[in-house]
Length: 57
Image 1 (cartoon, rainbow, N blue to C red):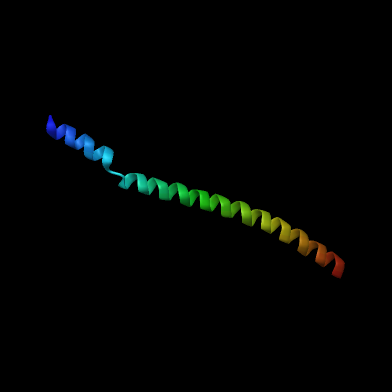
Image 2: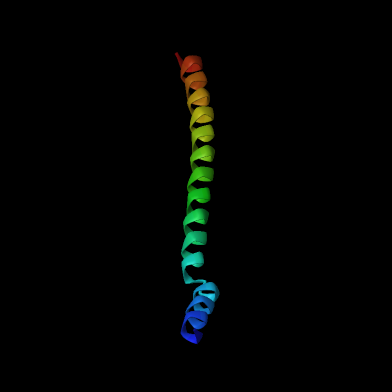
């Protein structure tokens, strides 16, 4: 019975898996944020370049 209690206690106290999950969630949020920024930046840059090319022509 003590072995089962110790096994359960060790499982609950083990945070190694949780750390991996936190890194995965953080990386996913970073990728989502960068995608949103570069998508917006790309649209703005495309509009500016089109405007500049129209003025030159």
